[in-house]
Image 1 (cartoon, rainbow, N blue to C red):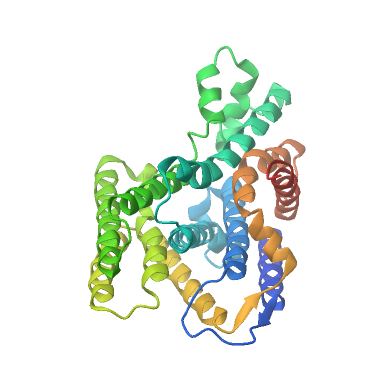
Image 2: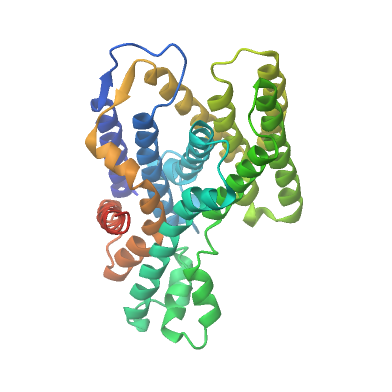
Length: 358
């Protein structure tokens, strides 16, 4: 655990140092709090690293997590890191969509520009992963070994396609990825609310937000009462997505409607918090604190750091490849190194991003 803690500490220190070093002062400070593209990209870069190191910890310590002391940095990162990052990702999704959405966008155009942009990388990474799994010697990784490291049994089943054809196809289509599914669902909710109530005046802005919030609350109620705790991620983050929309939409407006919808949204968020365990609540509060600090910093500074921005640009691919490819590789070669997992993930993500984003 000491070596693991050292790796975790060095990586977090390095990322934080690169972020601070990359900050450049704006010629004129912003009047209102905002999240510009450079800072948004930087946040995504840091968040994807938090997810990777959390999943790396769980890959080796999921079964003995309760016996490990909270004095270990790796346990703190493993239990809090991914939840912090997911709140930030969901917030940025709601914020960015609300800032950039064109009100008269057709459904087909929305599918092409928004939904396909989310689903296409998942499809590419899953196809590459299936090819990799098929080429691996089946004797190297058993189903029990894979599952003990919280990796998909599809990695093993790919060697027997006639027997597991359905599972392989479903994996290729990305059905196991709850995050991508939730983002697509939230995007569709967003488009539906905009389509039903186009933004023609200030009154429509309020009605549209109320409709979107109502849909997300209804989604939360249905999913919370239909799924057990093992599927909790499917309904945990609507509040974070709407928080991004709310800040992007009402940041510069000090109106009665802003406070009215803020009260309703606040109550929804409170209910979401009260239905969670202590670890989730601490993670979410830390994520909110990070976002507040970044918004304050972004008033006077923008992010110019090249490496952090590269991480941000390929962050989605890092999320998609780290467990599907990089963790499988390090398990095969028998080196449980966080540095190696991070290096392999960044290289693979960078290559896939540059090849298929052309």
